[in-house]
Each structure stands twice: as structure tokens, then as C-alpha cells.
Image (cartoon, rainbow, N blue to C red; front, side, top):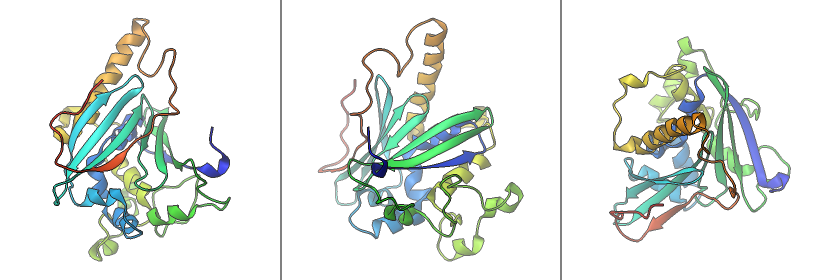
Length: 263
């Protein structure tokens, strides 16, 4: 439905199972830590709500099940008594969109290749033009570093696993949080791959910050049961139209509400 200049998209081959990619998109808690360097740079460009992820690193989560998947709602109490609300909207099983924080919304599609790899389609979309045909768009420069721009391998590694994927320890000593100075997506790709191609979830110790991941896993298991029983699965069925579904981030005037409306 959007014009060519309203959409920007890249692709990166991820060296792990697709579900690890999906779960990363539902984990708002990592934004203010793993992506600290890039979020700080983003915040320096103006008054961006996402900068509040640096103020409250451990959000309180609520989850709103929907016909298409779920809304993962992260609530961060701020020092001034207000609350930063940020949602991740998951369209089961592969697609997540996150709010643009004063800019275009972002989209993540974890598309399986096989059991051990997936393609991450990462990009942005907006009702307004994102670029004038020049690639990359100006706003992308905020989340990029020293990696040559390649939309067909946007977040690729700079080194092998034995070389810590190219992590720059000198950059870390100088203040870069992760040491992956190529771009923001590179941080995600390295973190997911370092867990192994299929992470052993029996060794996990899940916490309250993993509640969206827990709900998504339960929803997928339920979808498998529904499919085997011949019932409609989540995200399918008549009347499904995702075009009006958008994520949200906002500053609420008071502390986090005790109960959020559910459907």
C-alpha cells in the first residue's frame, strides 16, 4: 500500500533458528543495554521517546493477546514520576513491528531458511517519504557505524566466531558498549548467533522481563495444536487486515498502571 520512497528494507542472513530472531524482537529490555551506543546517538539528534529506555533499563511487562498475535507492552517508570510506554506488535509467527519514536516505524521479519538459519528482513516504513531515492536514507546513518553499507548483508559479521565475530575491544575501552561498531543490527545478529544455532531452552531461567517471550511460545504451541486439529490458527481466518495495526510509544503522565486493558 505504500510507495517506494515510504519504505526502506535490508536483509541479513542470521546463523541461528528463526525463533531466536522472533524472541529478540519481543524483548524490549535489551534495547537500552545492548544498543546503548546507538540509542544514545539517536537521542542526541533530538527529543526522542526511545531515549527513555536508557533511563529505566528494566521495564515492567504486560502482554495483550490479539487475533494476529500479541502486543508486548513495556512500561518503564521514569525518574520524574512519569512512565515510558513502548509496544512491540507481533504478527505470528514471523513479523514484528516496533514504534519509530518520533520517526518511521521499524519492521523485523525472521524468515526461516532451515532449522539453523534465517533471513532477517529489517527496515522501516512511514506514511511520509523516508528518502528521495538515495540509499541509505539519512535517518539510517544514526544506527550505522564503520561497516560499509550493504542492504543485502546489512548486519553481517566482521569476523569469525573464533575471532569473536569481529568485536572491537579497543572501541569498548573507549566507551562503545558492545564493541560491534558496524551498525545496530550487527549487535542483534552477533548476540543471537553466539547463543548457538538452536539454543537449549531447558537451561533457561526466565524472569518477569521474558513474559512476552513466554506468551509467544505458548501461542505457537497452541497454534500447532490448532493446525493439527483442523482449527484456524492465530493470525489466520476471515476479516484479518493488518494495515491499521501500528505499534506505539508514549510518555504517560503518572506511574505505570497496575492493570492494562486486555482483550
